[in-house]
Image (cartoon, rainbow, N blue to C red; front, side):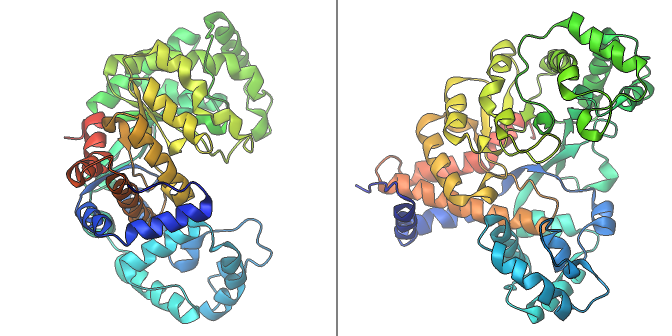
Length: 441
């Protein structure tokens, strides 16, 4: 029997051993043939991506806010000068898996390793050739073997068919319909849905029209990522208190959240957003479509306190809306074991590992191992790139395929699964579960 070693060093040794076995090699070969579902991306429509997306290697790496030398962002400089600026930053950060994912994607798509200025020139030339219409089909569908890609579809526009290939699907974002940045949000809803807002009931009518519109226009679900702005505890909704907040906002044309430099703080608007979440979920429940929640890492607004996005805070919603399937994102990091427990205990909770493979492959393997022992196999979704660039999406997918192969081979070596079962489970967590949850076929 193969025993799991729990220390960090031991985990690395275990992974190395597993990958040396014929069992792993057969399972990995089978996994590499699976055409997957990418459950979460931030990719622009293709015309916008080509016009405003990354133009070269340095765009892919992004703006490091704490970097003292930012000459690498200056496109008027030579690649040699830009690399000279960026190389020290790269050396400090290339241990992070966020960089490893980009490196992996670049190697998969372009066949180039990042080594020096000359390698950057080669990457830039390869990107010029790839970055033209059809890039999503060529890179994601053909190279990545991705049959469906799920992206954000903003509340006002939905998924614009002319901007995306036909293998893309949209989950409509409800953040700004629940947590208002400013009073202008409500006036936009009023104009778009033809409902003048005087009270909370008017917002509830807008939500009904929004969900009906989403169903007509082919949305496959809904997504809330407002943990960047307030915590996920939506217990004890009170309509009277919500009404009082809304009236105050309607009377104050400068009403904004305090983080945006405005007049009303998040605490003041809490009663309104709490009630509105329930109002929205009542409409979503009628649609029988799933709703995804961002859990775990936060990086906007009052960010820095990850406790606000602890997935356990959502338990009252799981209980009250038992007919809604909740798709929890990002492995709940750092609440990774608590996240697993939610999938184990709540029939309507699905566990989505999008982004987590990118955050830490070691964490993701450990959590996936726990999921396979605790959670029904139909409730695990292993892949979502959660990226704005295709190179990162492909890099994350390569890491995900390897992680799944390592963990499943480990279970086979340990006598938990047969090889046939392991490959069946891989098919489910990389493809079938997402298709069934979001009714993609």
